[in-house]
Image (cartoon, rainbow, N blue to C red; front, side, top):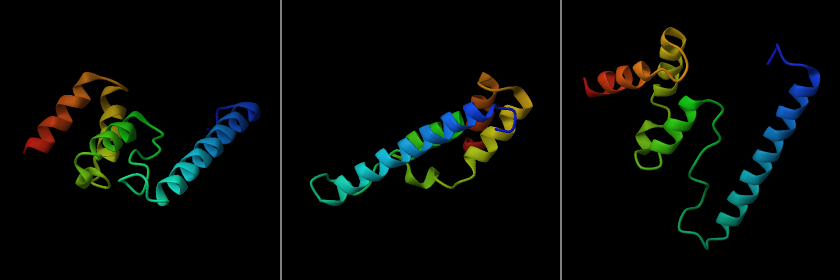
Length: 96
């Protein structure tokens, strides 16, 4: 965030703090035991790659921490953000 104004940095930091507070509250509520799952299933994501892996990992937990986020970010640097080529490269690599 080095290219942002101090006001913008503050906005994003405040937003992040509020989101973390909501997640903490949700996890506390879940800890009471009224929900079948003890913690919030979707982790906080700061990039599209983290969102994708976070959502997929709710069904396939082994995806979390598998290095796919880092690989997606590498491919986005090579092909551009949200370029469909990234999807096909990841699918190809996973299928091998």
